[in-house]
Each structure stands twice: as C-alpha cells, then as structure tokens.
Length: 156
Image (cartoon, rainbow, N blue to C red):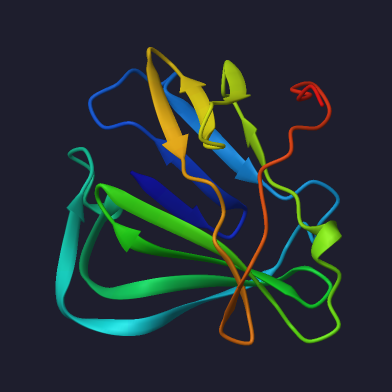
C-alpha cells in the first residue's frame, strides 16, 4: 500500500502491524513539493475509516500517476502502477543534475543491495525489493544503479 499525502509518501505492507511502514523521503529536497494526479481512470473509490462519518471519504476519483514536482530543482518524483507492482521514477528536466537524486526509506530496519543490484528493504517482518533502476534519456537506455549512502553504505 502507498499513501501519497502533502507531506510525502508512506509505504505500508497490507495486513502487517503499524511498525511495517516506511516513509519515502528525498533528503535535502523540497520539503513541500507541488503534487498532482495524472491519467484519470474510470470509477471511484470509497474509504470508510472507523465509525465517525467525518473520516469517511466517498466518490474519490482514481488516477494512474501522482507527480511530486520539483522535489529537487528540475526533478520530479512520479509514482504509478498498482499492486503488486508499484513503481516510481525521477523525471528530470533538460539540464537537471541526476546526481542530486536521492531517496531514503525512513522506518526500514535495514537496506541492502543483492547480487542482481536490487535494493532490498526490511520493513517489519517482511522484505520489499526495488529492482535496479531503469534509466532512459531521449528514448535510449542509460546505465544506472542503486548506491547506498549514509547509514546504509555499500562497499566498493
């Protein structure tokens, strides 16, 4: 599950305890990026949370993508897809510095890289895998990989 709010994104595992969540952050980025929904889809969703009707939300429209604009200067973070294949991309404007992109998973017990270059997150009692990044520029594939920094530093 993914909750996209004005503060950012929170990743949760269905059926898990509240400790099974990780907040997705862009360190050093814009703390309040503009966000907007894209690719409107047919139908609506209703959320009935608890017994208090003030917490109920009905006729909520569905969208295929949510864009957080300018998380870094000239760089958007876009979430799309659906269970079980949530995906996210950094979308760079011409001239934007790709080395500025960074993502943190606050609340993960451990973050590591496996043999195929996937990013592995230990969240609660489960593991989530983020496949190696796919990077394209002007329609052509560009080399890229995950690099661990800070608390979770990868060896060279």
